[in-house]
Length: 320
Image (tube, rainbow, N blue to C red):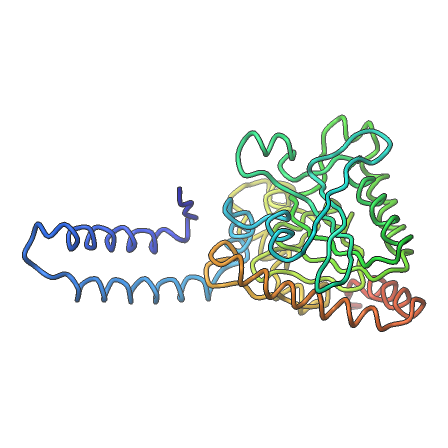
C-alpha cells in the first residue's frame, strides 16, 4: 500500500486521475482515445513533483526522513555491503534489537558496520523498539567498535533514530552514561570512523554512534539536538509551531553542511530514497569506499587529532 505524505497529495490526486483514464483506455468500453489527455496528465505529474520536491520546507524534509517506506539500516547493509555477519549482545545485560552491527566487506575491504534499526510493521517495531536503543544497545555498539579497533577494521555507522529510549528501564540501566562513554571512547579509537545519517538523526541517540572522522548525510535526512515536536512543545507550548521549530533548528542537510556539522551530502532521487534504493546504495557505496581510502592514508595520530579538532570546532557565537 502506497503511503502519501500531506504535501504529496496533489501528486496522488493526479496519479488517481491518470489511473482512471488508463483503465478506461484499457477496457475499450468507449470508442474514444485518451492518449492526449494521458500525456497531459503525465506531464502535469512530472512538473508538480519537480515543483514540490525542489522547494521542500525543513518540516517536509523531516516528514520525508520518517517516511515508512524509506530504506532502513539493514536495507542499506544488504545493498551496500557484502558478507554481513551480525553480532549480538553487550555481554552485560541483553541484545538490543534496535542496534544492529557486525562484520561486513566493501570492495574487498573488511569493516565493522553498526546502525540503528526501525521496524516495518507493529510486530517488528516492538522488537526494534521503533529504532530507539536502550543502554545495552550503545554498549553493544561500543563492544563491536573496540573489537574493530583491536583487529584494525574501519567502522561505518548508519544513523536512523528519533533518539535513545527515554523509558524508566533505560534510566535505571544508565542510558546517559552509556552514551557518554561512547562519545569518549569513539574519540579514542585508532581506526577510521565514518558515520552516515540515513533518516532521523535525533539527539544523543544519534550522537552515541556519531563521533566520526567524517559525517555524511542523505539529502532528505535530518540531524538535530531535539525533534521539531519537542522543540515546539518546550519553546512555543504548541504543536502548531512544529514547522517553525523545524526551520529554527537548522536541521536539514544543506543547512548542516553550511554550518560544517556534516562533511558531505549524498543525493537522493526526486521524492526520496524509497523511490530508488539501488541508486542511493550505489552512491553510498562509492562515498564509503572513497572516504575510507582517504582516511586510511592518514597516519593514526593525524587522523585522531583531526577528529578531535573537528568536534572542538563546532558551535558559533556572536559577541555584541
